[in-house]
Length: 106
Picture 1 (cartoon, rainbow, N blue to C red):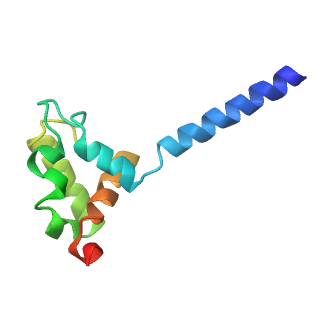
Picture 2 (picture 1 turned 60 degrees about the vertical axis):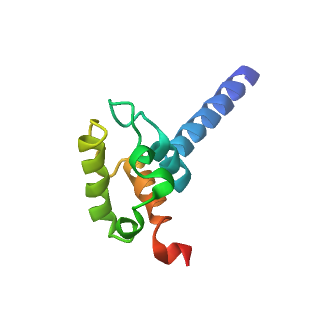
């Protein structure tokens, strides 16, 4: 009986951790922005936009438009695959980019 409770507790903690890992967040977006994992050419978003430079106007765009811009950059500049609409990683990138908006920095 004690073993079953321990296994169920471990399983619950694992599921909870996995769910937290896929929740969109600006922090995850920043990680992705600085990662070379989105493309195949060894570059990251930060390679062209260090610290988000040059993205302030784009960051003020509507989220759906920003998703398109992000995926265009991933495909064209990074030579990667577009992120699926509604994916936690795409939502995280958009969330991070929104923090760069001039309205957020004033």
